[in-house]
Every structure is written in C-alpha cells, then in structure tokens.
Length: 493
Image 1 (spheres, rainbow, N blue to C red):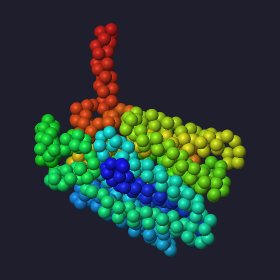
Image 2: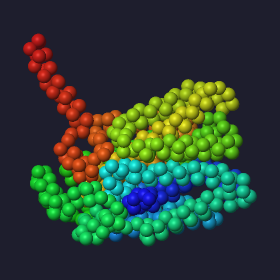
Image 3: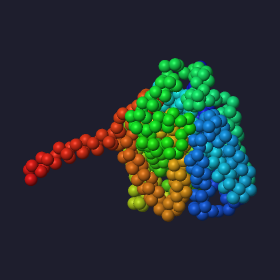
Image 4: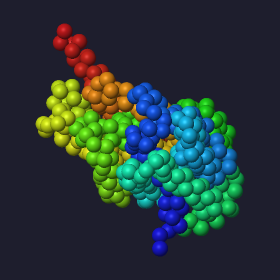
C-alpha cells in the first residue's frame, strides 16, 4: 500500500495529463482533412496563432497564478484552474467557427496557467526529501503518458466520418479535466506548509499524520524555530524580519536581495526549457516528419505516436532515478546532447542533405528527432522542473514558480508561433535557433546551478545563503589567478 503522500502526489500530477493531451492532439487535429474542410485552409501564420494562442493565455494567467494558492490553498487553486480549462475544451469540441475554436483555446490557456505550476509547488511541499525528486517530476511523466494517449487518439479518429474525427479528442480532454477538478476538491488535503504559514499549526500536524509523513521528514517546520531562523537570516542580510514572515509574498519580495538570484534562475531555466524546441517537436511532429520525408498523413501521425511512446518509455527510469541523478549534472549533460542534435539537424537541412524521396539524410533527421525527445525527457524535463521549485524559499515559492511558469508559457508561445513560419521559409533556421538557445542555457546551468539532490528544503535554503554557485567560484579563481600573474608580469617588464 503506497503512502498517502504518494497517492496525493499522483492525484495532483494528473493535471499533466491535460497538458499532454492538448499538446499531442492540436497538431494532428489542425491538419485533419475534416478540420480543414470545415474551417478552410489557413496560412502558416494563422496555423501558428491557432496552436499557440493557448500558450499566450497561459502566460498571462501564470503571472498572477501565485495568489490563489496562497490565499485559498493549493488544492482549491488547482480545481479552479482545471474548471476553467474544462470550459475551454468544451468550446473547442463544440466549435462551429474558427473564431469559436480559438476562443476555446484562449480560455483553456487561462486554466492551464492557473493550475499547472501549482502542481509542483504542492508536491514539493508534501513530499519527504528522499523521494521528492521522483514525486515532483510526476506531472512531467503524466504529460508524457498523455502524449501517447493523444497522438493515438488522433491517429484512431482521423478516419471517422464527419467532424467527430476532430471533435472527439477534445470531448475526451474535457471529460478528463472535469474528473481532475473534482479530484482536487474532494481528495486532496491542504498543504501542511501552507497551513503553517497561515497560523494553523494543529491542522498542519493532522495533515502530516494523514499523509503518513514521518516526524523526522517534516523538515524543521516548528513555527518558533522557523521564525527564529528567518529573523536571524534577515538580520544577517540587514533586511526587516517582518518581510521574512509574511504569509503572502508580493511581486517585490521575489526580487529582494536574498531571493532574487533564485527567482531569476527559476524564471530563466523554465523559459529556456521551452526554447530548446521540445514543444515544436510535440506540437508539429506530423509536419516535421512529413518535411523529413514521410509523405502520407497516416505515416506522419504514426511516427508522432511512436515518438510519444519513446518519450514515455525513457521517462520511466528517468523518473524513478530522479533522486539519484544530480539535478545540475543532468541539466548540463542533457543540454550538451540537445544542442548537438538540434545543430546537426540544422546543418543537414542547410547543406541540402535531406531529400524527401531518397538518401540517408532524412533518416538521420528522423533518428535525431527521436534522440532529441529521449534526451529532453530524461534530463531537462525532469531536472529543471524539479530544481526550480526546490530552490525557492517557503514564503515566495508559489509566487516565484507562477512567474517562472509565466515566462515558460511566453517562450512556449514564441516557439509554437514561430515554428511553422520558420519551417515554411527555412527548415534549418528553426533548428539552429533552438540549438543556440539550448547552448546558452547549458552554459548558464554549468556556472550557476547548485546541486539540490537529496537535500531538505531547509538545507537548500541554507546552501543558497552560504554557498556560492560554480560560476562565481570559477570567476573568483580566474580573478585570483590574474591578480597573482599581474605582479609577475609587471616585474618581468
């Protein structure tokens, strides 16, 4: 019998199923013959806007998504966002015009932004340190599972007569989001850490007991000790202690001297998690495979479904070993692999080595797309999404992660919008863009990520206050070397 905190984490993670379903069905649906017959053919710009409109809406709502979970509790905020998502999915399933379909996607996006980041916040707060990485990455795993469900749902409905072929995937998605909203309302208890921040210590103890978390794993959350630690830390930083004990952080608190580096790193890494190009592959997989040489719609859909299966299969060991592989090492090594595959594909297209009907170039591209999916699913998709909420202080975690997810959605919108336009003009340009962004993020992670594997949230807090990141250490050593070398050079001269 699994521990109740595990069950609660899995239930909370099911929000990833909604994301994965939409990501995997929207690309195939918008190129289905039944869809284009009903709404007409549209340009690559319209196609990009239609697919990415949900992401821009999610970005907008994400910027203030930290307030509902702080004010009303994590589960209620999750249910509220899922309810709005359901309305959008229903509108898309019943759309009679392209405008109605687009409005449904915008409303769905508002729901996304409100609930998605709160999943990792909630799980991070209830999970014991030794299993936090595995549980916090569950929304990502659920997303991967839904990619398979969505791709093969679209593959199975493409031959249905009439508009039901493209409506059915959205009907299924609406049913899933309804069930998720109800599960959050009636099955999940409030986060004990949220209860403590709201002065409800006795209720927090009952929830800890209900979740089955051992007392030694409750991470020094005694209110008096917590306040003393916050006061001591704020005195060291010469900042008012009152700010450290606020129940609800403001936007300005995210950029206070003691937390702004962590806020920036979370926002930056979550944004570049999308700029690596993974959602270009997921949203436009049929288009990418057709461009690489798979001519029929069914073949492209099948190849997209296979890519989703590959992601799920490789995500299983990556999820199970999330607390054994270092977050920093996984991000740096994965970044190198992602950069190489993107730049290799771009070089093949730039060198005109990819021929639709023959030649090895197209098969190299197809293999590289699969390889890219594997590397991303086993490294960045896990390490960055776990690391971002882990490094935040308790009083700013919800606000900081909502901001990070907001930037994530903005970058996601940019990728989804620009990808079909770039592919129509220059296939190599899209891959070179994603490869360059991945390289930049890899350099930043090498210099500034601090390892958090196996550490309690309070230990991570202390580490960020006492330790310097690798980048600062390297730059300090270089500066020391220059300082030592300069007098010798002057003496020689």
